[in-house]
Every structure is written in C-alpha cells, then in structure tokens.
Length: 206
Image (cartoon, rainbow, N blue to C red; front, top):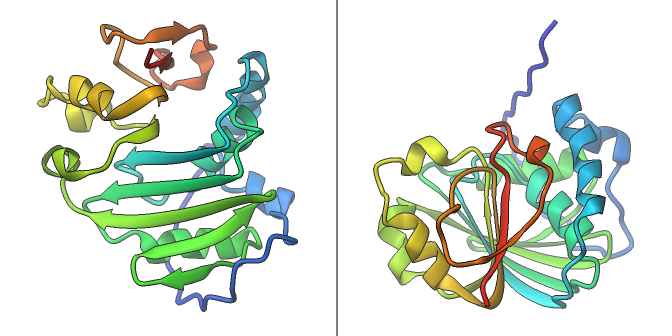
C-alpha cells in the first residue's frame, strides 16, 4: 500500500520558544515518506558547512518545514541562528505551526514570523504570500537557497536561476533537487537519490 501524507491546519496557540525542548523523533519520522527519511542519512557524506548565522530562502514551501530543518541540522552543525523566508502563493503559516506542534516543538509568534528552537538552533521563519517570480527582486540577499519539488513552477521562468544566484551572498550555498546545472557555482558532489528527479544539486557561490 502506498504512503500518504496529509496536512490539516489546526488553531495552535503559541507557547513560547523553548531551547530545552527537542523534537519527538517518532512523530518527526511520520512527517516523511519512509524512503525520503532514510535517504537523509546520505547527507553525512557531504562535508558540513561552517556558517554560524544564515538567512535561508525557501520558495514554494507549501506545508514543508521538516525537510529544510533536517538539512540545516545535518549540513550546518555550527549554525546558531537561521533567519528563514518561506514563500508560497497560499497561506501556509497555520499548517506549519500545526506540524511543529505535532512533533512537540513550541514556538513564539509575532505577526508573520514565528520563532522556535531546533536541537539548540535558533530558527525564525517569516512567511510571505505571493508569487516568488515577482517577489524575488524585492527580497534581501540570502546565504542559503533551498528548493524542493519546484521544477514545474519555474519551467516558464528560465531567467529565475540566474536571479537566484545573484541573490546569494558570496560563500552562499544553493540546495536544489533540480536544475541550476549551468550556473557559475562551485558544484558539490551529492547523492542523486536525494532528489526525486535524480538531479540533486548543491553549489557554493565563490
């Protein structure tokens, strides 16, 4: 029988960020398809990055909070604070708060930003509702670009990849499960199994 992941937003009260609380690993695994979770172990073959603070951009995020958190945890062990910008055309803030509650992570909230701790890392997410292809020129420079299952959305925007590279700070890291092969970045060898398309890409702007 195939696996199915469904998300239904609930009204979750902010209880305040607490750096002593760790995610419930059993409930965390339930947020992944089994193969996807097992493939995360392949990240240990990639040399870790040394950033201690970073701004991360995740377009077309949908209800996904667990994948970027796992990449941050496994690839950026020295990271102390992450300022994240999640962009989607739908309101997804309540759904992501529900996922955090499901895995036992309390958060604080102010307007369109939530704050919580993920295994000791201070994570802050600002949610933007809109079209990333229109918003991209207005967004700040970022240290990490994270993309997943977004290929179809940007097929009609061939200029988008170059705009993203321009948004990366020097030393910034691009993580995508598709595309960006022709960008001028130092490519990092990564297991292709990390991408459903078999095109996993990581690069550093130098």
